[in-house]
Image 1: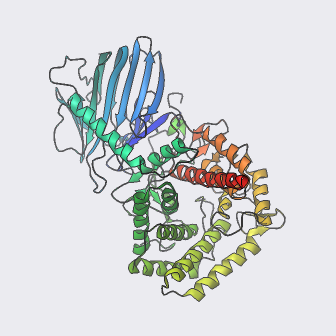
Image 2: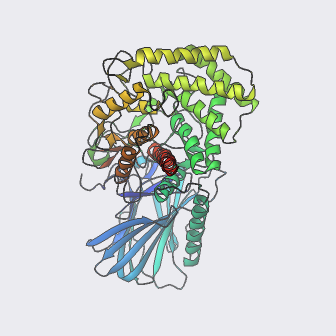
Image 3: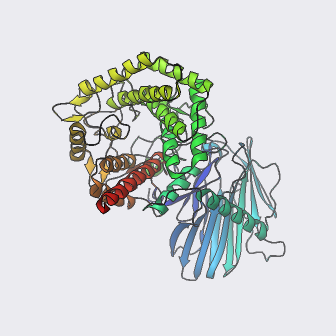
Length: 616
């Protein structure tokens, strides 16, 4: 199990249709193509022996390793400091088109020696379809071609025609390729991996590789320059924004929750889910967050993706919307287990697909309507077809909000009356009412207002526990839930309401561990799954936001600064933090980065306002 790198010991590269994880030892151990949710080609992150990998590292195992991004880009540099010299592996995926989906994707790996002498060992061992499909391999002087079913993959060397031969392809077992490179200071070689190519492998010149690098750097630096954020945590927020862009399927506008599947919420446990899909909740949250940073095109694209799902209303028997979809809007996400894979560090089972897709989660309707409302305020207006679709969605919600559900955390212990679900149903009606009255649109306003007020009164009566002096996770129980940290953010309660201040105090006493926040206590509220979990980074940032809105600014700032120390060396976050401080769960997680941006901007605004008051 020690052969597995820590989850946090990875960087992310991508081309806005798929992505790859690169560990600090130079191994690509997770890569799916042609899309995020396609079967893996490299998957040794979930099974070191059977998953497949693409490694590039110094021959001498005695080296120090560092990893960084080229400034303001998604170009990753892994540095190796050896006794003989310093070498670098530069990884990136050129962005060919944001408009059209393609099976063709390129992953460029450049090896270079920047000081002294470095010998690189390279091993290319793909395992197609999660290692379930065999392949054939053809090797020539111009490169290598893999064929597996309908998938074609080429491996082309980077070198000039008159270059001395620094290494040769070797395929001793007819499945994999190994080679070594002896580089002296100033020399650069590498390989270009390409999927979906209709042409055979062919040599890529150093000049061509340099141009691919320059174009990729220019793309990312041009994109990040659109940011309007100039606050205290500019570097951290820009890295989060780039990460969110990397998790975007540009042709559709969908945002995947994470690029990985099966990474555990507890090492050795069974809470190992596939996050390579677009959740209505995450996509909705992203609209407001990206607008706050100035990325209006991405916010509009996510808004259009969401609008299409609302207009289609091709949900299941649980309602007009599913909680998640594939990036192209396909709702089919049947869950299966990779029986032959051991899982990350023995965390079995490794799941692909997601069986929670058919759950009833009422909160998504509030998050969707909140996103539509924020998009409208930002200039992404709703046409008549969109308004009619919203009215149809609200008609369903009128008749269905008052029922048990699985809830935001996708528990598998049965349906319950979750307070957060009711809260977001209140948001759905509230935002629809605002949109109707702002533009004089036809709507059954009296009915919507009646339902909104009924939900408000129900939450105050059943969602509040006089014994706990707090809003609680579900009606009739006394369990606390960090999702309710959004109550002030969405406007349900005032930030200084005594009931809200008591709720914050209760959450602090039970769910907060130093600066970190658990989402709930599974032992007090069984969720149908074995094992425990870490603190949820999303919830910690929601806590920061809640503190800032309640003008507890000193506390909010130190907790935010502490939380920054739990990011990995590149500023990336997984879903959870273990008791040891180790990152666990799928990585990197979009929701955590969205919440981090939101908390930082809220805290910035409150700190600036407090400073302005002191100056008056």
